[in-house]
Image: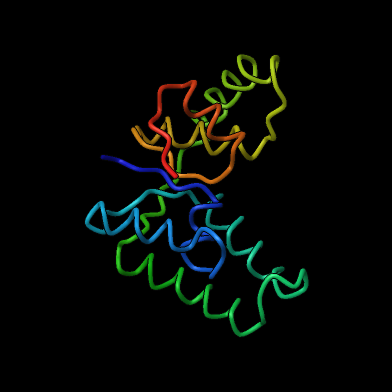
Length: 145
């Protein structure tokens, strides 16, 4: 299995939210296998977590702990941050947008995450985002969680 984790999966891995237990149960069932993320996912995760204390989603100390957890996850190989060259990413994202966004609305980040997973040759897409699940499944990725 080659899994790609989107922002929702990574956030839930390191922030104590309603999906945290599901992430860790999945990881334990899969022998703590590494998942791929992109620098875009990493940036989106870190930016979101930095804003969580302002939004009342966690305390500043919990946000710092989550950010430290992400660093540990990268250093220990739980998450592998892999870039996708723009010359491959954007044509794939454009194809997805042309095909999928005519029948439903998909945000640019959702399209870029699914395109990234495809370009990294992932076979599994890990997300709690309903819209991304739909697009990933339509592109024959196994969708989990």
